[in-house]
Length: 104
Length: 463
Image: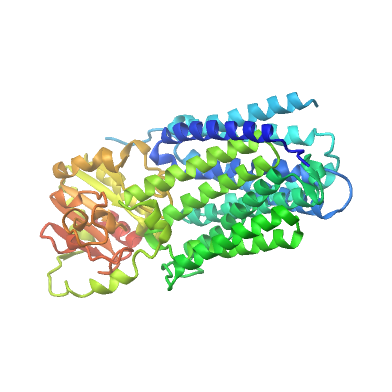
């Protein structure tokens, strides 16, 4: 019954709180000008949920779980590619432009 | 691959994600950060593909290619002004993907090492249902937010009687359903949780609209992270837990910053209903006041003879797609030796940092784009403030009128500059429904018209 022991849960909880604290400090250091790219990139990385979807889609056969897994992989992939690319597009706009200011 | 090896690779992947966020502390390091993120994701995916139980590479490969192609297509095609909608749509995908992964774990717990069908561990069931619950709310909430931002659904807050009571009741129902689910592990209860949570997601976003949208978008960003966390706990996967927590924290902080930018608590934003009703009270009581009107030529003349100009863009600039014409105007003024800068209010636009991206798109150097705290004390020394598409964020009533719904909101002190040029389509109120007394001040000149057209005309007059 208890395949998922309470020990595993406590480890998970430890990781969770430490990650929240890291997230807190890292995100406050993000410059407000880049808050939109921040949303883009967090969106992309939250699709790391694809890991779970791949595990579900992994085994041979065609049971319900596998179908859900495949759908999950498709949805998460849209996000991963879309999220990183749109972030890339935003960030490349913030590039320092070569000063071709014709100051005469 | 050994379990330890997997753990180490997942850890590297998680560190990459942290670096990805860290890179965003400066525009120059941000692109490298994005690459870290991509590398982290590749490591995570390849590591998972190496699992012994993962065999059907063809199906998974096809799924990644299909999803990747769709994502790439959308991301390359999207207009920068439509970013808020896009982000909302992406959040909904994270939410629904979380539901599918949770469902997969429920139907085939053995693949995830959490027991057998019908005898899944209690803690796994609780984590699974929480992940499902948050995922489903994220999904429907984001779909509605997308509709509101896209304009397919009315952007106005929709308020009805007993709204909060109904939401609280639904929450109680969901909790009871989760308890029943944990006891009997029935698929029908699982799907009922999904459906009721989807309903709750709609109801949570329905009363929020207009200028509160940046908070909603950030909040859903946060939810999508917590959903990933819930799944991480279900699968005892530290990578998912860490990433989910990072994203959750990020969204929560952005929501906090946005609510603070409006001087409102997150709670009051979430409860919704801002705007709308107040609009009725303040209509017409200023109809007898005098408004000074000008045209593009006047504006060009005033700015040409100034030493310093601060441009204050708002959502109206995005709607009119005026950023390029605006930058052109700024360039000409700069060539005349005028000090041109841009002032961004934290809640300008429909998502955090929206204005910054649009100005960057139009090639405005980011050094010229300043935040409220950085530039607000410069307004008294500034000759011209050029307000384009912003309204509430410049309303002095926020400082003086205690009865105003926007009282206490930090605003850009444009009224302290010598002249205010206010580009606006009409005398209509902003999203808060509050009249802006700035329009009637002696040092304000209203420039009525489309923001883009106005900038183009000013450019012509300057030439």
